[in-house]
Image (cartoon, rainbow, N blue to C red; front, side, top):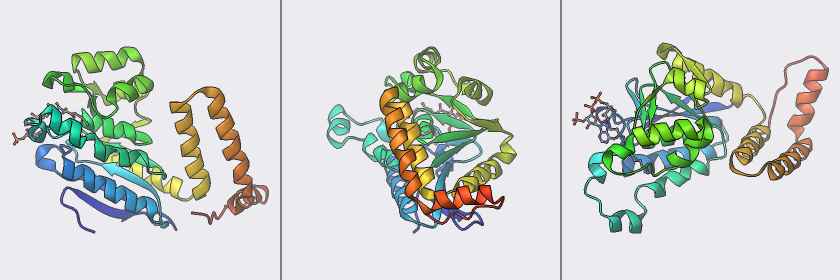
Length: 262
Ligand code: HXC
């Protein structure tokens, strides 16, 4: 499948591989227009449905993961355009429905919708060149794809207010201190690090990976007691899988497990 605004590749050498999606509007710093978001959703759904793929990585260019929604495209939209058609957020919901892990590999600018897209991924690994921000206030708008909700959960209300209200950018070191990103690495090592993390996940049992993702999302989205109950049910259900038998037998017999379930 060929796309206009993104590139897709399959990477890795294990039995299950990584679906790599590169945002590809370099001249516009990967500004997220409707077409790009449509393609991104379609590519992610295709990788999610492919048994040969264990997880998905989204990345941009050295200069920008994405500098936000496409301002030129939005500039003339009226309230009725955005309300009736649900521009631009309608396309963003696809990402939330992806069941396999999704890692954001961020170098350069991740601003506005770019920061929101990174936060929709399951975790972010950043290059030391990364810059995060929600500068929508400068345009007379506010974040519209979850920024005001995910940022306070990720980095505290104080820092979220600071970024959203002042429009200032946060560098990679601050983003790591604040808990927005899981790791910061030198820019030249970004893709090797992310693809190694992805391959690590690919080699585990598919059902346990998917359930682990679902459980952590419960913690992020719901009350503790409900999350604990949900986790317990998921935990118990994994004892019905062959991979649980394989994983534990391998440990007991001091050998490497060969997980089979996708
Ligand atoms: C459209 C964009 C763009 C964007 C950059 N470009 N960001 N086009 N939408 N979000 C274009 C520029 O117009 C320019 O095109 C080219 O990319 C290079 O950008 P420069 O500004 O020349 O680069 P630089 O001076 O290095 O500055 C980089 C930058 C700046 C700091 C990232 O581009 C910037 O502030 N961009 C806007 C960031 C922003 O406000 N994002 C939030 C958008 S609103 P030309 O043709 O001149 O070369 C949003 C709402 C989300 O995201 C809602 C989700 C539902």
